[in-house]
Amino acid sequence: MRENFEFLEEVANVKAFRLKSNQLMVLAMKDQTAPVVGFQITYMVGSRNETTGHTGATHLLEHLMFKGSKNYNKALGNNIDRMENIGAQLNATTSWDRTNYYMVLPKDNLEEIIKIEADRMRNAFIDEADKISEMPVVRNEFEQGENSPINAIFKQLLATVYQAHPYHHDTIGWLSDIENVSIERLKQFYHDFYWPDNAVLSVVGDFDEDDLLTKIYNSFGHIPQSDNPMPDIYTQEPEQEGERRFTLRRSAPGHSGLVCIAWKVPKGTDPEHMAIQVLGRALGDGKASRLHKALVDKGLALSASVFDHPTRDPGMLAVFVHLAVGVEHEKVESIVYEEIDKIEKNGLSNEELTRLRRSVKVTQAFAMDRISSRLSSLNESIAIGEWAYDLKYVERFNQVDSRAVQAVIRKYCDEDQRNVGYFIPKGEQ
Image 1 (spheres, helix red, strand yellow):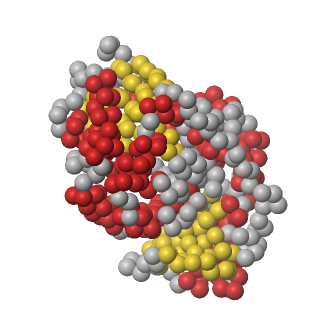
Image 2 (cartoon, helix red, strand yellow; image 1 turned 30 degrees about the horizontal axis):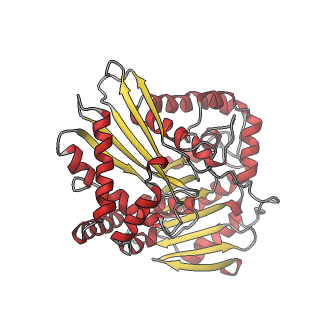
Image 3 (cartoon, one colour; image 1 turned 180 degrees about the horizontal axis):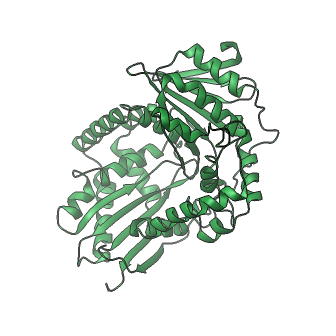
């Protein structure tokens, strides 16, 4: 069956193929250390593909995908959750740029999950009764996020940073949309995006390559690619023309205040983004980071972290600081700027760059230690539009020097481009 696939390339022991009949992409990474295999299907659709009134549709659809399909369902006694009886670990996640369904299972059962995923790619039950039954679960996830100060301020930060682009709304969506979206709209969303030419299969573990490709062809080969191009996202975020600020006040017993500061940065595949990654790690990667030393070690904060997750479209670099009791938000905010200014003026020392490079190497090594982590790594790379992004991460990170970091600070961390948010527990002035 190998003749039915086009071999694309191999990067760090991962081989990429494309199924000729429908453009389905396959990533295969062999590891025979244990008789298990991880299987994942990533669809290039996430909350960035949603519009006003339909936010949260991708996530809700993810839940409905577990309710059965034409040939694999509870009535037949072979629904996907039955795989847990053989010790399989399965789940799904939704983000801005993708939705993924994955399973780690005994290698002898690989063919069954391939058949299940092929069937629910085009034959999933998306009906009103399942939507109603799943609504309490989705609503509970929403409420859990609302009860978390860090999640609440993150959602408000997104709505502040992005005025036009769909990254404006959190993946889980707005509650009114979640509760009122029609089953017809969810079906349309499914029919628009769940096609082989909008998906990537990732297989990691103990398998025979020829046998794997044969199984994939037998199950997926007959599915046609979409008759229409995938709906495109052409909305671009307009240039920000001045600092934006917000304050979020709510009752939060046991929680301290928060400061968040964010700047827009290039998309993940932009060459400049790796310098943003270095900057983010210099500021917030562990106890040796700049912000930990300046804030946590001095008793001004309980924690300081940086969000710089690469995205398909231009994303953001964001700093989050949990304040110590009695510490003023303004004081912490000014210290964050001071630390960034120091890097812009003096750069990163050779010792600091060496520490960051060692840390990244160790982190990436640990990430490749488990099948589930490797699947996650491939999934996030697929999401931003370069499946080998994470496999090339350490090499590219090591090529960034201090001048490149200083350059991105000057270009992107401008006062007029920043977005600042305060979370103030009620009762605190």
